[in-house]
Image 1 (cartoon, helix red, strand yellow):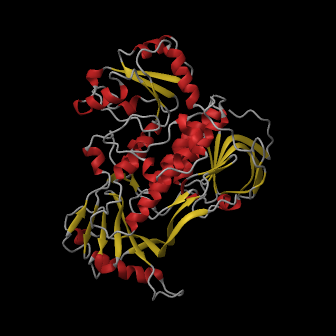
Image 2 (cartoon, helix red, strand yellow):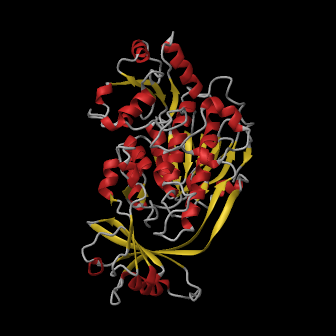
Length: 545
């Protein structure tokens, strides 16, 4: 999309993503899929070496499927097995906690199931896909001297001593929990720290004598005050120990020696000689940035929100940030949408990420295996039940106090179908398997009963940037017929307009006098045009870092 003149020392693109971890690479892939000219820069020389995040939620699997990489992730990982509680790995496992999102499959909420795939395995898959789609991905590249002007953002890039300037229309900060960009924008964090320092050790060892033929994805070992996590998959198995820094460890303590002792206690194998591959120490907290954007700069992932690892929400929430923002940036860069559409990123994601961070903190305070407290929201709701404010309410929401956080979600088992909620999965007897499979990943989709007059009129005069999909009611699975009739068809609806991020934008009423004009108007509203949108922020210009 970028046509500005450049020189060898100066390049240009539509969007610059700073940070090439899980979230930054996902942003690059989603943007490139939309045809955006995107550059991703990462100061480290390669993708992550330590496993970090492992759980891939149902929602993230849906998004990875839209990129066409879900099969690769399944190959690189393995099914989520929940976790056990025991004195140690060798002992009898006196409690087993099922995978957090098992209920989504039981309730037929998605054609996908949660999965276990380590972050250092997902990142190369995302990088390859982003580059296949046209993204420019630069590792070993330091970004500095970031300045924002009225029409663009510029950054100085240093790649192995070769210095250049990159100008972009927008910048995405995916530079982690210690985000330099966030700090230099003067954006603070709201929240609280989680006491203590965590220690993570990736190691290799034969634990079959402790497993006794059992399959364990994770285990809380009470004797060692530690967790054991299976990493990789059955053909390439590694293990990770997660524990806390002990008061008796001084600055000169050999962590590998101390951790080997804890690994032996956690596995119940006193003669074990584990090979420790890497060690990380870190602290965490529950924080949300006071703003998710400033002018032409947007915060994603850990730069925008940090949370304890309980529930596995962190990386998944960041990937979903990127998916929410990518189609909006693409529409603005193509000239299809008003730039005010970008205000909806904070309006939509802000309340939801605050709720998710609170829920992760709540889980961190609960002893694993104990009953959930009443205020805990189940993982399927947090993953699939996002409920953004309808576009028609955007002006009011933007300048008013945020509603109660629980309004950021609804129960996906009883979907409302209102604008701002995820388009429910309907299992189909066709090759698509699901209504999610027929949604266009880069365009709005109008999905309706194959007898819909609105769909018929659209097929004759389709608006630009709109995919039209019809479904024979008989192809909907029996367990989904009522949802199909209530949300997509029935007595009061002649079809549903769905955004590229699978969110309902509008439901067409029956008996429209001019269906094409009505849909075109709804599409324009969803793209930020119309009087209900608030005035854009004044663009601040000046040096950011």
